[in-house]
Image 1 (cartoon, rainbow, N blue to C red):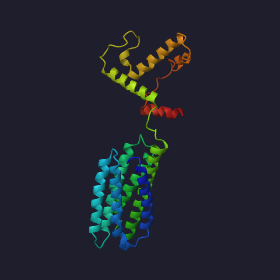
Image 2: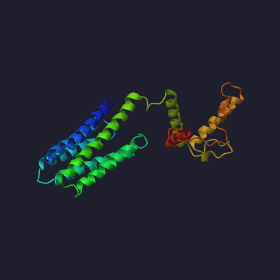
Image 3: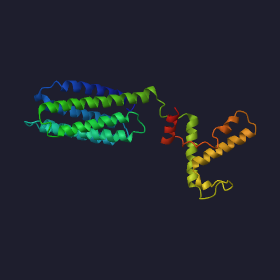
Image 4: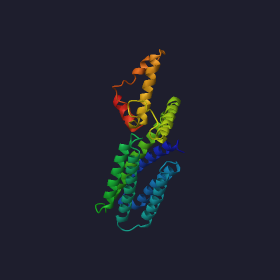
Length: 269
């Protein structure tokens, strides 16, 4: 289901584009009849997202139920004005925009498109605020709001679809480590746990430097540097340059697989 999610989002983005183009050509009398199905389609998209089993499936399921109830109210409350459709469309946009802002902020360290999704969420929330205001009590503002809703959702779903396609198909190993690096990370994590669980002052008392003032990462780098130097002094071939990988006057590199080390890698590129 997760692997095929990008295909459904692609279909949803194209459908939203078609809805946006069609809505802008509506007659005022058809606004209420179309607003309900549009909100129902938004609820369907949320239901499929929930079935994909993502971390926020419960949030998507809740929004699917909420938007379904909103669409029912839009279709049942057919009064002579556009107040109810406009306010409920605005409610849909504000909820959907707020969720997009929250999810984009949560994924800012893992998804490079989080800035675009954040902007789309803010735009949806702002459009919903306008739709709920007294400025949209006529047919034309409601039609424009529906068109804007469809366009913003189309962009969001198409971007998400292409991003999922890139991760799952084009780069299937984007989240996988090489076997050597996986073993290294596992060993580093185990050593860090042992270091933190060790007694207060049992280690490295023979050193001139206070061992308690060092972190585990500093201990690992210093020990590796000393070991490389000893191997090089013993005349083992192929490791002579290893003693100079981290000269004493160089700063200790950041801990691997952390935001600091990633930022340092980007600067070196």
